[in-house]
Length: 175
Image (cartoon, rainbow, N blue to C red; front, side, top):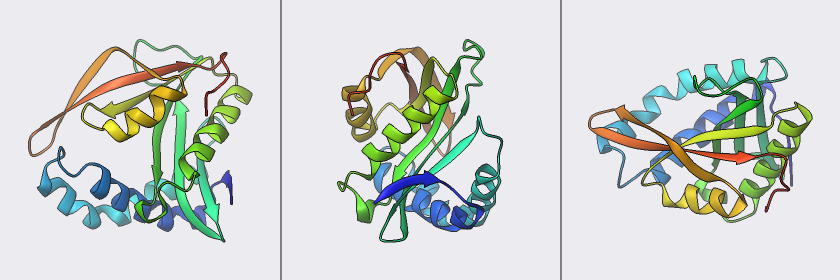
């Protein structure tokens, strides 16, 4: 088991994990119609993740691998929120295949991402989390992430609210 930088060939597995993870984790607060339509977007997701795997160094896509199988992924890039500066990164995604949950892949991905973020000279990291995503918040908050004042709403089939979490990379991670 381990974490490595993704390769273009990992894009299909990453896209499939993204769909399964969203359908599992977001059931109950994301519109059912949105979740049901996710498999239709797997090809688009696959293309986006293939591009991300080939992106410049400050944009990274990491995969967790166990027994030669991609079990999860994390992606980050420079932060794009207007209130963030060049020392801030954004954790865009952190997902583990629901069939491989609770095996430590998420913790390994987060630790590897933090190590690389520090190497890339980022001082802080932000991520957007659905307000009702208690599982992800319960994973990130004990690792030193906390809400800041930023919020946003996604207009899907019905509004879905998000909060922004942040962490300071100068402190040692709790994971």
